[in-house]
Length: 171
Length: 208
Image (cartoon, rainbow over all chains, first blue to last red):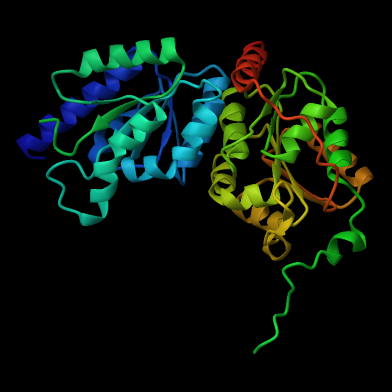
């Protein structure tokens, strides 16, 4: 593993560890390469239960069940999957007041090289704004802060919070 | 022009051999469960019927997010291993999120009982046909890894299948309950969704 990759791995592991340390103990999702070390860390840590899903909507359903059963859940996905799940957020999570932390890769962010992600990437923030879901961009400097503020939001507002992860931002 | 083999508006199969209405099926299920068994019901008339027949803290009525009832049931079942967990699904809802059945078949929660009320139609809309008639949902369930699969077409068989399911701990269990198309629609709407979630969460917190 080269030095750059090693640094990224350490930062993603640190982020996952911090999430587990503040009490998140259940996770579901559909993988994205930009979160590979986070997902791997969840898979290998006995303090958090990991149930992968076939589709992002399904992952949301599983985490809703886990929340109702007393867990503190996280769901991970790419923003393509977030756009797939908008109705589940607006008809299940928000009206039933189910606070779930989303880790969402922001494809189509400035610098994107894959054209199929561009429209999602450009419209995602407006969509989230329209349905009233906040999103914060993760950096290596704001990890602790973003986790604390997300935790507080989930507790106070009882609605979802999104942490956006941009490819190659953790370095 | 080639004549179509099946008529999309042909519901004759429903009256030929199925002797159970939706309300009757849901009544049998709710009467067959003790007050310690959580129920997650799928959207539309299924949830509204359950709400009308017997509202209880053990019920979670999923009124939107079509297809996700079984996923919510999986999330509950994994985290409450000492409880039996019942999902009341619809055929078109199951088809909308078929991956959920595959995940359930993979993780095999022993305590999950997945009941599908199958009228081969989108009854909560206007009865447009779904394609469950040719899908063989019970065979799909067996193929993806459910451990115990039953198909029932009348009230006494549903009652028996439910009793048999509650008696054992070798889920996931799949009950395909064929029901007639058409039943009452003047059912109350569930309005206080956040209170339903809170009440259900509190109910679940009493158990491991």
